[in-house]
Amino acid sequence: MAPQTIFQIHLVLGYVAWLLCFRVYVLPRLKSMDKVEAHRAIATLHSFRFFGLVFILPGIVGNLPASFATFAAYGDFATGVLAILALLTVRIRPLYWLFVVAFNLVGTLDLIVDYYHAVQVGLPALAGELHATYAIPIIYVPILMITHLTAFYLLVRRQPKVSPERVPHSN
Image 1 (cartoon, rainbow, N blue to C red):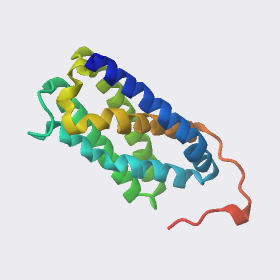
Image 2 (cartoon, helix red, strand yellow):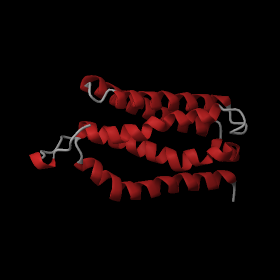
Image 3 (cartoon, rainbow, N blue to C red):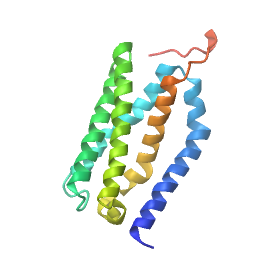
């Protein structure tokens, strides 16, 4: 089987597996949470996106085209920093919501442009050049995109009325 076929199967199945897991275990919990806490949970996941800098770390990946690696690395880094800033400003609500919207917009745009660049440079055929980072687009990227889309859904969704005994306590 061709490397690009294996990569594409892995990518699709990464989305399928995460969507099945997310729908059953994560989404019901997020929808039942206070809006601030739900976005805080999503921001926590995205705060680890500084890890994307690995694409420009010499010796970790093979010969990835610089046009793909550089944009992917810094897009992830920017998203991670914005998510961390959201977490740090949770008590300053206007600033918190600004960072929540910012990291979701930047992160979604980053992933969409990364997909575009990946197609342009023929990344599926070069998947072996990802070495240890192969797991990032297969396992990590699908849940990132799913949580960004969920964050947008939660931002526009009306908050359900919560009885006083169900109001979560914020730290």
